[in-house]
Length: 80
Length: 80
Length: 173
Length: 173
Image (cartoon, rainbow over all chains, first blue to last red; front, side, top):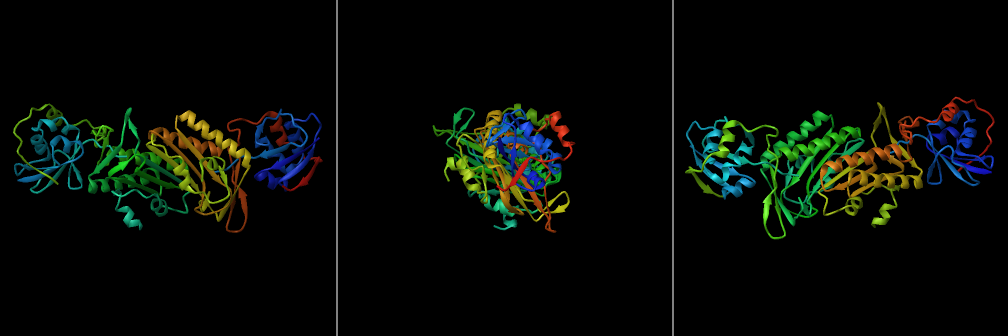
């Protein structure tokens, strides 16, 4: 299945883009997506400090993804 | 000598006036003035909880008064 | 309103205006602004309140609030602290006090603001009289200005002294 | 601006307006209003700053800030708590965040305000990019959203993993 990764904050800078399509197995979880993203050396160091969201819901690594999901990569935040 | 007492907050209510002239010995201190004021039964209970000021200066009981001073009686405060 | 005008009117009988307090304290090196407003509540200790009258010993109050501002700036290392208090008759919801602090970071702004407000409530010679729906009123139980200091023994004894002839002439001011 | 409009716009790209935040939270039973403003400083860690760009995951941010408001109201027993954050390009002195709390008394207003501001800074998905006089920029070191939680072991190990072929197609959004 295909999902879309949305990069936020510094991860967009590191990935060189705001958005990336990702091809995953039908049974893939968030952890599977992270594992695939971590093959990008520029991103790998940042991913463990990130939270992840599908739409407007924060999700855990064992969350099952489905086709068409938008998975946001949320690096440490610095609002205020 | 004569001084003027200025009553503030509840002490004006208790004294029934905002202001009172007081005749004191030439060597009188703030404590002497308080002692004289305390002869007014309505005020006596409140005076120990009050602070005292001459003009815009808080003064201690041993402060020497002089003729024409305005001595303010400042009961517990409740601003804000 | 100029800075100096504002500095000299910590006690005001007109409605307090937030805009000049904000604009006159702006600083480019400060990332945090903390503001407190004390407004008139419609109740106190379970009793309905219709309005308040604040009175203040204005010259002493200006001096003591200026001291509180300086002490807050020094103790909490904040560049700006300002307190203004209104006097006279205030209706429900009207602002009685504004205190503002600006500082580079927020932790010291919160701590400094709290100090400035508490110190003003404990030390500024201001008195609040509450009015109730039946037309009666009372002065709100307050804080002794010399906070935490027991009154001297001779003053404590005065509290128990008996009434006698009072060497005074009454008058109004 | 109506109450509902305000509730739905915790993230705004226009300059933040204090007046509707004050008026929409007014309550006759509240004697204390505490407000925090975070403004853009002209320096950070000793370095001059010319401006900031804030970005936010707006739908998630609205939801998380709404949670923070509710949690602050419940935990500190305050009737009103509201937080708004601006995004986009902000110049020095401009307001990035307002947080406001109203309550009957001041102690809980101060505590609740501090919580609401800290929680928003720690949990809302907002990112600050600083720009310097030489034209360069950097993202400000931030807080992990899952604060105090060590990342799971398999994610820690990922941080050390080697680059390899990436099964992805790049795109813009």
